[in-house]
Image 1: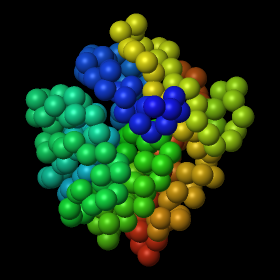
Image 2: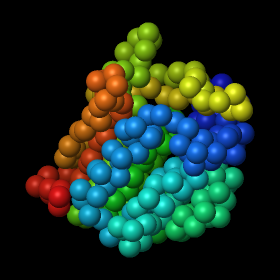
Image 3: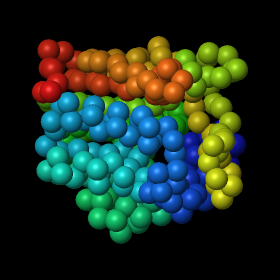
Image 4: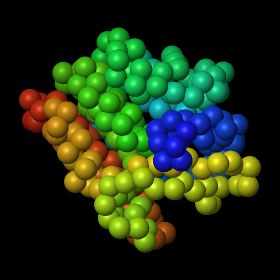
Length: 233
């Protein structure tokens, strides 16, 4: 298995199911608690979807948070251990499916919102998922992606697309074998949406109140022929 590959990402997460679940449910991740959790919830609720697909749902946190507001919630994740954690916590309908499975049509029907919350870490798998996204999003629905801010996530590395080594810096010592991730420039993210038939309705930059710098970047895409669609609140 290559150290920098989509398969290695899954392999790493399979080793950290319990660690991640404990960290999320114990509010151990400061950036999530302080900024990014509320940012994704607020973005979703601005569009008032009646159905939602959480791609890369992990242990089901987002589905549980949105359950009072969205009628139908479905989660998918490639890591079976995380899906089991989600199911045991009552996180709606959760299924095991890789992004390649989704690209091959493993999911039927479409949703008012398809959300990828810090779950687009790979290269080929993410590109395959975007290729399938038009069929997953309702005609008047939205595709929402929250990811690391491209400008601030690059660190000392060159601002070019490419694989980066993973790190569990800031997490407790129980985490093992950090997953690699594929860095995308802002231009690459915009291109992913546009070349797969989506118009970017908005780009949001949630600000860390301590550093006064963006903690993440949120993209909201709609089908290209729905450019006039506006949030409901």
